[in-house]
Image (cartoon, rainbow, N blue to C red):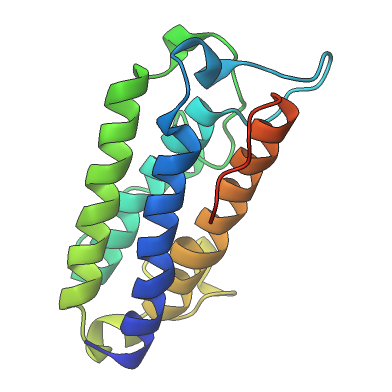
Length: 166
């Protein structure tokens, strides 16, 4: 495993466990709850659904396989948070899919060599800021996921729920 992959793997594993703790004690109703009147926060259902869109993309890039641009995906970059629980998979299914896709990325990262990480980022719109797959992998697996898990932590606090150790 490359040095970059090994370093990213540490945060990736910690993020997985942190996410599981952040949503582990929530009820089905809490998954789409909005704790602040008149304010739409990224709630747990949207956050997990959104992250689960990008996990298979990260795995595909690491494996050198094609994937579709997620920009217009139901839970992709342009998506809006919806508070209707029917717009998301059920809590248990959503958590299971997040964990499954997260573990798939770990396997792809473990198998990725320097050639895979040095390959050109396949999505043109990402290439200017992230020219190589390794650049995009760091962004997706560290920055992107950690940012959304921070939102989930803030959402918990706004809900009056206890904090969760990172």
